[in-house]
Image 1 (cartoon, rainbow, N blue to C red):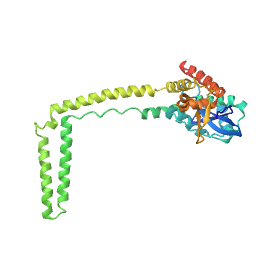
Image 2 (image 1 turned 90 degrees about the horizontal axis):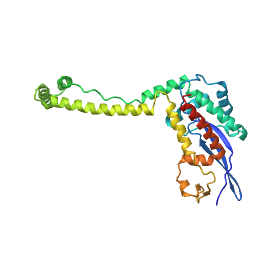
Image 3 (image 1 turned 90 degrees about the vertical axis):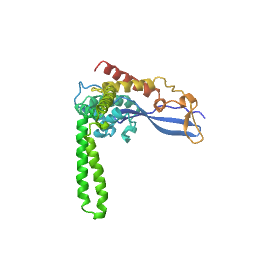
Image 4 (image 1 turned 180 degrees about the vertical axis):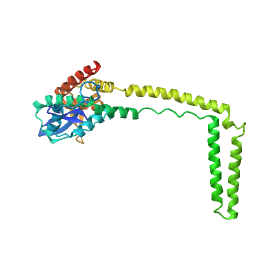
Length: 309
């Protein structure tokens, strides 16, 4: 059985991204089956630059009140989607009750809120702290053979002292075992100062340095990758996200037919569509008008970011 879909848009701010909800209606012979579906306007809330806005305007925060969204929750959602590419989202009755004609304006206000927040000092500080926490740690610089020798001597001497103390609390016939262990550690202690000991040779020191140099080269590569993925200005992060949304939503076949299988699950009639990504399917379910509106907003924001605005 084939089904038609018609758009009834619900807008939401999910994890800081404007989310566009679609109430798409599946027409059957005996009635209308209502199913709520969410479309993520993927990166409408990612970080831009640290220019311009420093506070969140009343107009943008006003839309949160209109939609019944707590400000702290909205900020956390923006943050989560920028940093973790999360798909979670708040849902309120106010969002569901929005009239279709009001939704385009609401989308713009939600986008404005997201843009202003990611430009704020609050977001900037949080982002830089998060970024720094992800910086790769450098390898520990190797100690010289003299330093290692002194460390091991101190550890053995301490162990011998502790064993001498412990021995006194045991009976005489049991103390022999302690004496044997103490004797072994004294031999190890003497071996440390043996100039022929291979564990503290120049060859071992050279090998340790080579290993450290190799680790440092790997560390430098990791730091370079970290700088590319988490630049000091988060604009490139949102640029990648916006471009991803535009790429995914570019070739949606909104006329693709679906059917309900024996378990009641909707599937695409064409296998090529059924094998598409979850994001592609969300775009399909949102409908052409919704997605094209989102694409226009994403393209505009992307262009602004590329121009450094």
